[in-house]
Amino acid sequence: MIERTLVLLKPDAVQRALVGEIVSRFERTGFKVVALKLCYASKETAGQHYADDQAWLKSVGEKTKKSYEAKGISVKDDALTIGNRIRQQLMDFISMSPIVAVVLEGHDVIGKVRIMCGDTAPNKSAPGTIRGDFAFDSYGLADTSGRPIQNLIHASDSVESAKREIAIWFKESEIHPYQRVDEALLYRKM
Ligand code: CDP
Ligand code: MG
Image (cartoon, rainbow, N blue to C red):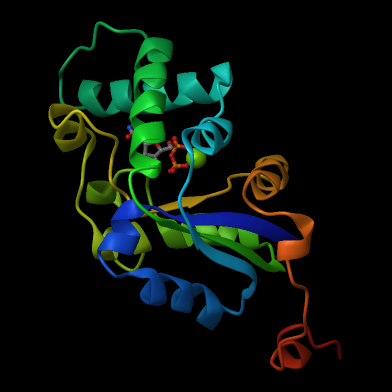
């Protein structure tokens, strides 16, 4: 199915001059850039993007708890409390310096881009993934530093979240459909 997904190259990606490298990976895979801009995220936009959504906040907290429990460290805060703390950190982090927002289009782009990003924690991300190749941050290092994990990139995780997130970052008039010359091959019918 042809889908669209939202990718954000977070402040760490822009500051480390990885924009070209990361966008290029998606282009070479066959995905089409249909919107792209360098921008500052306001606190308000950051808050919309990292929504005050109980299910997501819990899942974020659970990931942290699991990573500590795997090391035999028990965590007293519940998942929601941790999730809320991380949400505040993320809102500060994503609005601290420019980011690059991108809409990619292509066959099953949402799932494939997530695979290309790698695990949330770069220290657990496989080589060949964006987070695995260009970062090494971990839950532990991020927590002791009082900040969210610096993992370079955000990518939508479902059709619904892609739709919601694209509408936060782009007006319809900023999204530009066009034909790539290699589409004749990529989507060839026999
Ligand atoms: O980005 P991804 O979908 O892999 O992870 P998420 O669970 O949606 O969390 C969003 C972002 O929050 C992550 O990319 C991390 O930057 C940050 N995070 C964190 O700093 N610490 C956690 N325990 C979980 C998430
Ligand atoms: Mg996510």
